[in-house]
Image (cartoon, rainbow, N blue to C red; front, side, top):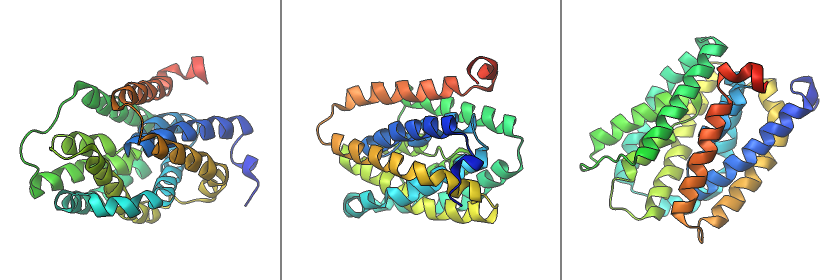
Length: 253
């Protein structure tokens, strides 16, 4: 059980834990973005379902302390329909993750991360009233993408940033959404047999790496400049996506 190097090399573990630390800092600060940094890199080094299941457990379990405050200030009228849709549609994404070729999955995850990063950089926002049917639709997209790649944040980010809500409420919406949607994702991943011994091996060093980053990021939310944060976060996401491209395997791996 605790023979970590039977499943992963020491260099792989060190690199993934470093990426997790950076991902945790971004997640703690903004309420999203960790999957966009971790998943492209992780799927270029380890089996994609193992990476996705490990990150789901990390993000679901370790971020729970953030939920305590978030549930008191989030906008439940838009969060609940999005969560319901995500819980339903995550099964489609999990099925695709379970039955697709590894190389295909890596290109799909690269495409998802790159496309959603461009969406965030473009500054596009949903400017109409955030009704419940629209919230449900956004949740369906997020759930499908989350099932495939554990990258469900950008659709709901672009959606909730369009509202007149304060940044703290938008961040709370994201934290609560991911916490509740994570329950559905866990069930879908369990049905597809993603929680393996390799996941348990990886979680031993991964949990403290991600938790420390998450703690530091959440502390920095109070006093950091949001504009500077976005530049740093987008740069890290872009770097993770580019370096994970299968086309660069001969050069980087």
